[in-house]
Image 1 (tube, rainbow, N blue to C red):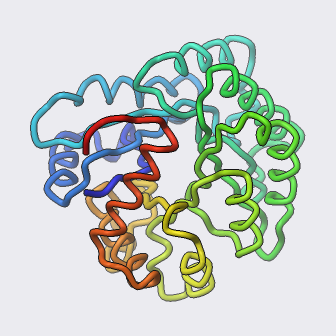
Image 2: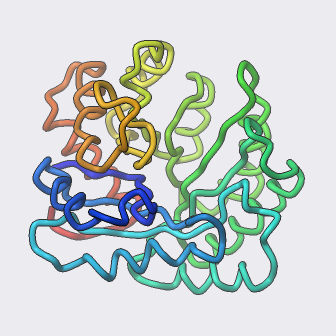
Length: 273
């Protein structure tokens, strides 16, 4: 069984076939999906939870969990009401994580100081609710500024909690992976791991211990080869798992077993899978 540790199931791109998409995931061996709750902004970060409650319990569909958080680009929208909403969502039993949150210097969608303040504020709420975090980190090409600033914040505000989290759609080098592991994070790889020009990323993935790995789609984006350019969906996480198995020289079902155990351990899930 596989777990898609990061999918935007509330995307409008699934509006016409969301149920069928989830059925395809189940048929492909995906037993769990973490539905990421950022929406198109804070006003919609509850949609992931709504989707969980709509589809959980239906036959031949994955079990769904949710997250909630404010994406770096949306951080200028944060006010007391947004933080209160986030706090309330993190109390819900289906909402197992705060995220995706972090720093994005690639698009510069929000001032860096605003992103940093928002990240710290959300870390404080997640810590109080004892929720792990899902981190988005994207620097400008060829530099590590966002990573450097992220680790400064995590060292000061997060390490002491011991709650760990997920480095979502990891795209850094080995130094960033090493520091993530040292902070107790799981490193999650998405469909870009399969792209022809991604050999440096595959070299990093080959060094990450099996007990610290996750796989994801980041659906509806980043469809793996040979589906690149198409709408991604949780069923396609199997392609990334297959490539990862080859890099680690293990059987594909071992990737499924290990990443499932890692996910359950991080979120303290006792479900028999």
